Image (cartoon, rainbow, N blue to C red; front, side):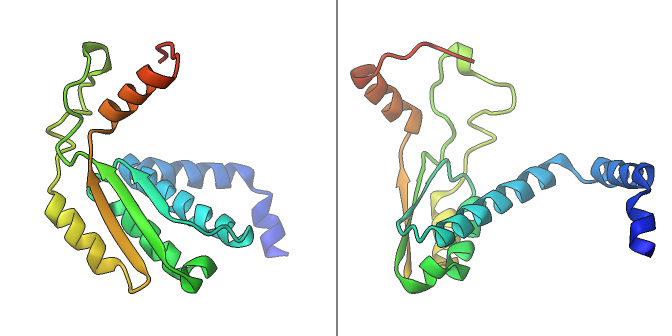
Length: 157
C-alpha cells in the first residue's frame, strides 16, 4: 500500500533522481557503467555457454581488465576452465597521430602508464586458472596497416 503510493509520486522520483545524478561525478558513473557492461558480458556468456578468452584493447591502468578477471572468477565458465586475458596497449599514450585525430584531453601525457605496475596489479588479481598477457602495441598503427592492405575505408567522424 505504501509502496503503491510512493511509486505514483513521479515528481518526487524525478526530483530525487536528478539530485542524485547531479551530485555523482561523471567519471564515477562512466566507470561504474563500464564495469556493469563487463559483468553483463560474462553473465550472457554463462547463459549461452560461450567459452573463450578475453581480449581488451586499450588497457591503460588495467581497471577494466581487473573487473573482467573478477567477473570471470564468479562466472560458470570461469570456474570450469582456464580463461586467458589478453591486453593490448602501448602503455605510452597514442603515439603520433594525424592532426585531425588530435584531441585536447586525450593526449600521450594523460594516457601514459607503467607497464610493470599494470602487469603486477593484474597478475596479483588473477587466480590459478587465469593467465594475463599484456602486449605492448600501438594498435592504431597495426590496424591502419591492416586496413590499408585489406580494406577500403572512408574517413568518418
